[in-house]
Length: 179
Image (tube, rainbow, N blue to C red; front, side, top):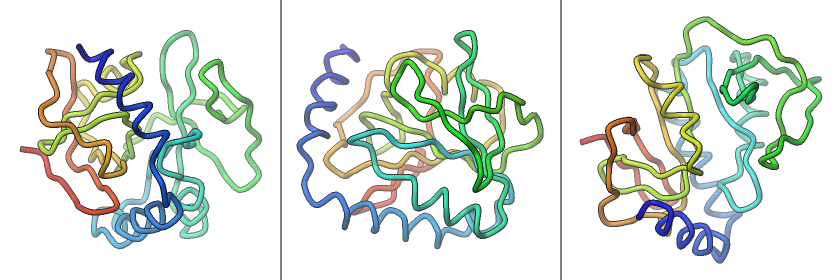
């Protein structure tokens, strides 16, 4: 069932129009959040093709002197590595630009933005199906925010035992909170 929902919403997301305005709307909501302003260590991700664009947020966060982390998958395990304005990237097997450096950041993360394909209004999500974020977030106390277009909202996402609910989901239209 999740695979069918994922496939349907990947197509739906690829047909979303007016991305620039929607991306800017989401970006402005994030940088004005109290949790974002107070966070010193932020885990982000390099957005791919039809995802909400995160490049501007990465740049802004670096310029605000925040410690910015990006994910990297090594041996089927996701780690986060610190980046700066000079970081070099390589395209992963998934098509994601990952930092070349491989030293895992092992200190506390204040805020993590989590990619998603589909969400519901209680902050459940469906990602890309590999479970990297669910495994990483298991037994960790990190504030999590998913970012998406409002068109990615689904009625009720079926949950499994290993699924981790996000604290918030921010769209171009609304902010949803974990229930």
